[in-house]
Structure formats: structure tokens, C-alpha cells
Length: 358
Image (cartoon, rainbow, N blue to C red; front, side):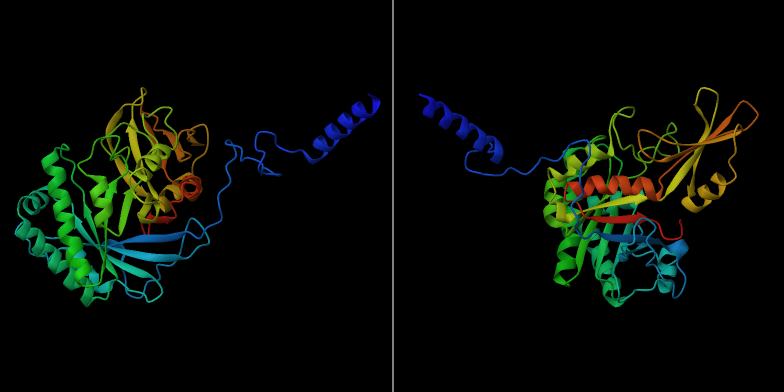
């Protein structure tokens, strides 16, 4: 009896020493689980691009500076050329004129952005596939002549998301994609960061199968004519939607390798009354301008904070006439926090808007 008891005790001691996981009998070792409140970002190589707007281009400029990380800029997007309602390129517009000053570097992949922002032009090409084809062919011709690696279609349509409009947009992007691939060029497109939240007219699933890159514009959640608020809230607490939800929404339908997140390195300045209601529409300001103002901000007249819902810079100044000026702006730090979250979800491609703003 004593021998049996001693044998039992010996077995228990052995089990305690090797810490065998009884709920996982096929493994002798279980790796410790990652704490959810302190996530670890897997060390994968990220790519960073930059939009180069036509009003910032100069000859022989170096667009390689990355304000967010030490990773070099590997993609440049010239923003961009635009068209008339008849499908002809607008050669008088500054975007086309300044294209000659854009430096297509051999060290980066370069993309020509087709700016489709004018609602009349968008209506024309959506209703008429011949005009879509005409615009696509001219865009490809310019991209090949200037030795771009591809085109990016910036079709910003804010109409109600009817099934007809979604089908028209998908068909239009398909025309651009076919022309691009027939000419061995890549094709990408932009979509709003609030596509799922505000019901934008983009059918994300078929579009993600058509394009090589889907660029999610994670900015302008609050716009110049909206109430003051961050460019894109990081958490949902106050604004009904968040950057985190945006990433989760897109990766449900788009392969992570095709997703690129674009951040706006700028901010809006609103003039508001004592109840935080806008007196005038907000004014967009480059990040470097906001930093200059921040360096002149001293209490009690002016106060600088980090907004808890977005991690963005928030600056409030008393105008001494029953009004305040309030600024929200992304910073390299706030972008890094958002980027780390995206990388956890295996989204690894990012763009900064825009060169010359930092």
C-alpha cells in the first residue's frame, strides 16, 4: 500500500515538473498566448508610397523622404491628370502641364493618377462606356510614354449607392483594368475609408478582383464643412466608426496583399463658437504649417493635446472674440499607431498624402 502511495506521489511530481498541458495531450509545450492589450507587430517589410500633387512638383525633386519611418519611399503617385466630359484629356489643366516636372525615378515604382473628381465628367463616363474606353486608352498612352509602371484611377463619386451606380463603376474600372493589362501596366483605384460606414457606391468584392491595388483613403472622415473632428478616428467611442473597424471591414473582402492604406499628413482648422459649432468651414493646412503654429501655441490662450479617440494632434486657440480656432491633424506618431494595427492584420502597404506637406 505504501509503495502504491509513493508511486502515485512520484507521478504527480513528475507531471508538475514538466508542466504537461492536460488540455492539449498531443503537445509537450504550449507557447504563451499574446496578450490582447499589448499586441506584438510581426516584423514584416512594409512598403511606403507618397502622393506627389501637381502643385508640388519641381524638376529633379527627390521624393524619397519618409516622414513616418526609416523605410524608404518605394512608390510614387503623380496626382495627376484629368479629362473633359467628352473624354478628351484636359491639356490646359495644371495637372497635365506640371506632369513634365515629375521625376519618374528608377528607384521607385511610379503610378499616374487619373483624377476623376468632377461629377459631370464622372456621370459622362459612367453612362457611356465609349467615353470610359477613350479616357482609359489616353491614360495608358501617357503612362507608357512617361514610363510609369501603372495607373491609379481616383474616381471619387459621392452619389447614393444604387445597384446601377455600383455596376457602372465596376464596369468602368474593368475597362481601365483591361487596357492596363493589355499594355503590361498595373492598375489601382482609390476608395473612401468610410465606404462601409456611409454606404459609398463601390462594390468592393468584384472591384478587388479587377485591380492590382485598392487604396483606402483613411482621411477626411471629418471634412471642411462638417463638425470639427479628427481626420479619421482610431477608436469608435465618439464618432460611430473607427480606423480599426475600417481595416476589419476591408480585409473581410479584399486580400491583404492588394490593400494599401493612405494617410493624410495634414489637418483642418475650424473656427467655432463657445458650443463648438462651426462659424466658418474648416481650412485644410499642411502638417508643416500646423507644426509651425504648434510651436507658437502657449497656454492659457492656446492648448495642445493628443485626441484620445484618434491619437491625432488637437490644438485649440482662444480668438478673444467669443470664438475659438480648433485644429485636428495627423502626425507621424498617430500614423505609426494606425499602421501598426493594420500590420497586425497583414496589411503592409501604405501611402502618405502628400509630398511637400511635411
